[in-house]
Amino acid sequence: THHSIDVQWGNHDILWMGAASGSLACIATAMRISLRYGNVELLREGYGIDTSALVTLALEVYGDDPATMFRPSSDTLVEKEILLIARMHKALAVIEAKLSADVVKRRPEFNMTDRMLLDGLNLEAGTVTIAGKKWELNDKHFPTLDKADPFALSEEEKIVMQRLRSSFLSSEKLQKHVRFLFEKGSMYLCYNGNLLFHGCIPMNSDSSFQQFSFDGKVRSGKKLLDWFEHTVRLGHFSKHVAEKEFGCDMMWFLWCGRDSPLFGKSHMATFERYFISDKESHIEQRNSYFQFRDSVDCCSRILEEFDLSPEYGRIVNGHVPVKVKKGENPIKASGKLLVIDGGFAKAYQRETGIAGYTLISSSHDLVLAAHKPFESTKKAIEEEIDVIPERFVVERRMEVIRIRETDVGRELLLQIDNLKTLIEAFKQGFVRV
Image 1 (cartoon, rainbow, N blue to C red):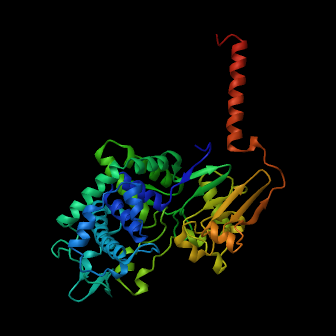
Image 2: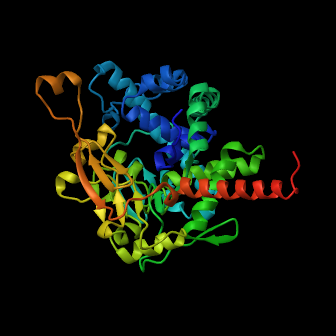
Image 3: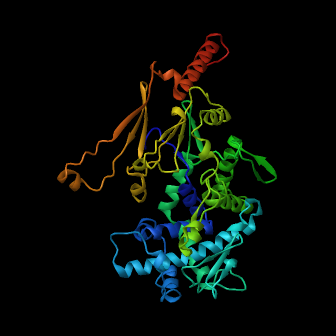
């Protein structure tokens, strides 16, 4: 109901948007992440997701599996609940690996065949081969894997995904929330001379804009993000089967695809983190954008790409939490770029040391407020903890910004000019009452 609100889609937003649009790969991933944090009640009670088939699969197929690497992060669950969720979690991780391979096979233009990993498993030797290198597995129990066709879902897994897809598509509250993201959201926003986006503007190692080839056309920079947004909307709203399927696959690509503007890395090492203990296999290479975003020249070129002033415009960025406790500064490129991801999600607060940022723009100044982690009202009162955010002035404006200099003001001035033209036309008799 707020009069002015917008959302710049992030990789987790696009994942749930894809899941609510019917993408099986997105559904499996969204479910896996929810179980990772023990959010079973959110799924069942909040969105009415039917997990009964998944529970059956966990009990009947993974019933003897300790699923050690899949125990959820939760302080409220008892051991019996933790073990069941861990087995459900593992079952979904395997399903996700299979469904992701389906998308990769269907879309060779994604250039992600190196992420089809299940055919590299050697369970007898306890290894997996990834990009020509063998890694030792920490878990060799894959009861639903068909050696002849490792990417095929078992009959039980098919039932699980059919039930989940039906639940996602019929969940009134989930569809309402995702519709809100489509109505109020976008890949980026230009507002009052500023550019807001979540992840990155993909760049090459020489700081030029990275080109992507889809549907026979090559795009980069602003045109690339505009095309992604158009395609994503077709994935949710189109009645044309091929358009909808392509849009859904593109939402999955934006979630985890190579150098996707919402993900910004070479690959997502989900499988490696679960099944390989050697942390060298967990490394994900960041897009070159993150190397150059501290450069004033680079930020200026990005602003120009989006038809904004390189002198007065600013970039407001998210995605990568700023590790404040390690001395990282959210203000980059001499103030041309502000990273306002400070770990709003509780899971990140141990890494960042804070609980997120709020960027406040007024007619007089630009202020960054850093919020402290908040556990409870009781603790704040008893320990007399100060919950007032720490504020940093990014810019003290020499001249007050007036309404006429804002996007809303320019729209109002245009309406005034139109009304004056209409009045003049009425006076001269060109418009009759």
